[in-house]
Amino acid sequence: MGLNKKSVDDINVKGKRVLVRCDFNVPLKNGEITDETRIVAALPTIKKLINDGGKVILCSHLGKVKEGPNEKESLAPVAKALSAKLGKDVVFVADYNVTGQAATDAVNAMKEGDVVLLQNTRFRMEEETKPAKAGEKFAQELADLCDDYVCDAFGSSHRAHASVSVVTKYVREKGGNCAVGYLMQKEIDFLGNAVENPVRPFVAILGGAKVADKLNVIDNLLEKADTLIIGGGMAFTFLKAKGYEIGKSLVDMEKIDYCKEMMAKADKLGKKLLLPIDTTIADGFPDPIDAPIDVTVVDSNAIPADKEGLDIGTKTAELFANEVKSAKTVVWNGPMGVFENPTLAKGTLSVAQALADSSATTIIGGGDSAAAVNQMGLGDKMSHISTGGGASLEFLEGKELPGVFAADDK
Image (tube, rainbow, N blue to C red; front, side):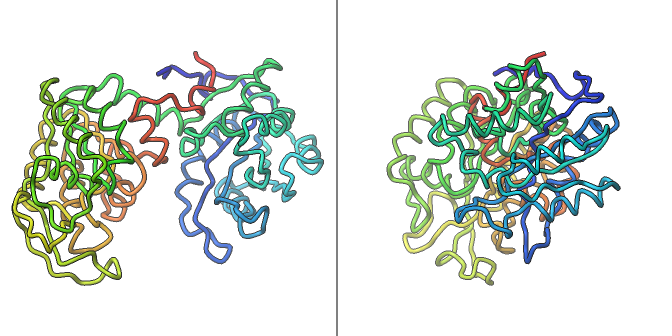
């Protein structure tokens, strides 16, 4: 995995047009942004390029754009928020064509330190590069607007999209630099190095609902980590593979043999694979998800046939927390139970608290774990919270991410 990439600190952008791929995929309600985290995360890179005298052209996708270009998924609210945060006018190119004449005119009118935001890249169907060749024309049009390119959208870096990786080919052809921004650099430093060069003991914690989502992650982390902890819904398939009764708990019958293989692999490699030793059970899944619910805690090998496991138990929470105490590096992806329910959030909270109290480098791999940690007010106690759920999972699998791979090596 090539991790030594050229960053914004390695390029001179004075007087140059710099295209920056950001992740402005923010939640919107009635045209208003409800969470500005992703916009705030992009500011250091944008400010650096402004201060260095670059002409900063920003692009991003927003939403899935299933019904074609529409005002509900326009980046107009992002331009407004950016203008306020940067204290300067951000010129928004509202044209649904993204790279049309309006964009060319806006870029031609730029002075050093100016900022232009292009329309939602997914308004061009070619952005998602299916079939692969379709994205070439759009990528070339994006490259025509700039001299250098910076990718700062880690949340999209696992996708080989026109504005994420294909564009670099055309920027490079005309002698431009392809670098990563500060946000991408931080992800590479923390996630990449945690997996490739961890300070040991290295503990990896995996949760969430499905084993299938994390097959390659489990396999890769068993090679890399000293201890692999498995909680959440996916733990029940492992418990079933051990021959335990798991009642009505979530299970993936097709992955039983895989779980047996992983437990055997852990033994062979001399790695610790920790599973829940007790489980918080109830009659069934809460409906609605945050409804009051009656629960009891039983040993994991004694779940009644008519009950469903919905969180780790108290002894397991202690076991997992103790393992974290001795670690020097901890990576966590996926909650320990139905954390959206106050009664069933205890296991996830105990793991989050153990990481918060730890002196280890603690890395939260995006998605639900990031939501859980922030919801519990412990976000600022973690060394790093990844901005990309899918991208961080693929990083943990040891995959080459197109958006990282496409940047120039130092």
